[in-house]
Length: 341
Image 1 (cartoon, rainbow, N blue to C red):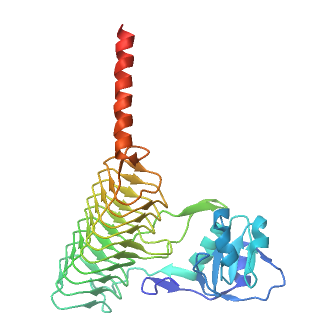
Image 2: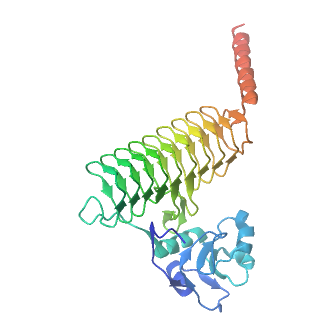
């Protein structure tokens, strides 16, 4: 289930409710009705959850799922495990998104006519500047300073001796001690999840959290999205420069550094002690090992083994890239000389 500090539960819904909401066809049609209380991925779903299959690469997860119900296309009806109610529909992910929105809703900012909600708990020594908004259920540790215009969303936990910069916003997030969030940074906003619906592209609910461990620094105007279901995690003592983007479900290890304009796509896993030069891009679902260095401007499209240094677009081991760059430069000079002759 999504963290109740950040999401309200609107369930349960019966399978019949799901059919009415999405137009799906239950399979088998004589399956007894059941109550559904949550929306979850195939590998995390339990008997009271609804899941979906939109890509056959997750077929093994469908066959092993413990979900009580699952949206599938007609081609995969035969792969639904015993005990799971199949819900056959043309767009399984869009149907799941509609049900997820009906079952779970994000808690909204509510300060009850006061800048600090009466349900918030602030330890001694917390310093709040003017125009700060602290929502219900927030917990802030001693010695933390919150600059003007910062907005702390419902249920957020911030540790001790942290610094929250001007006009920063933090939601759906758990922060450790000594975390620094600089001006204008956005922590815990929805990740980029979209799918085709009946009337065009629709948003897919993002039901995870953002977790920043002790000693993390997030630069000005940087964004760390919350997870789609799993958490987005930034490891201890990792430092992000200004205008860095961390997408949903990314896991960054400890003691990493990322220079400005780096962009890490969804579900990337990064080991400890990695360094990324400015304007680095990493494609989704890539795994980067411990101690990796990525040169500025590189575009990483495949896994990088631990301890290696890569550069270029597409990124490759740095010696190969430098060799190819030198070869291309030499060929260009020779062609220019030949054309002049």
